[in-house]
Amino acid sequence: FGFLGKLRLLATDHQVIETKPDSDFGDLRMQCPFPELQAMADSIDLASLPDAGHAHVPYVIILLQALKEMQPKCTGGLPSTKEEKEQFKALVRGWSRGDTEVNFEEAIDNAYKAWSPYSIPDGVRE
Image (cartoon, rainbow, N blue to C red):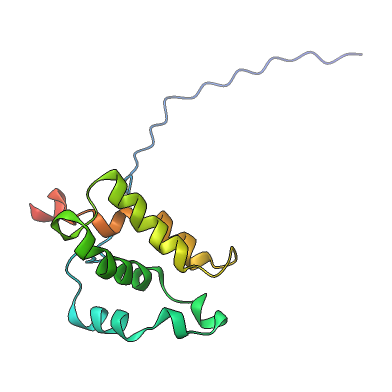
């Protein structure tokens, strides 16, 4: 009254090809912003914004303002040494009004985009 069985599965190799790039750097044009973006960044006064508005400033605007403030202090205009990059992040961190402002954390997490030059990918260039 027992049931005895055997099951054998045979599957061939299944290859997965990742068609997306590993990192999407994005073209934010931080080193050379287009005039409208720079005008928007210049028109926002972070110090005078109410808390709700301060917490909703896009991180690109925060990074552009930090770059503008750091340019006279950096060799070559962009943070290049480890100390300058840490000063840049400390400047952005100092502008935050509290731990609940996710946009400033996002700016710190994406700070490398402010000093990394953008180049056209090889696939697009060809």
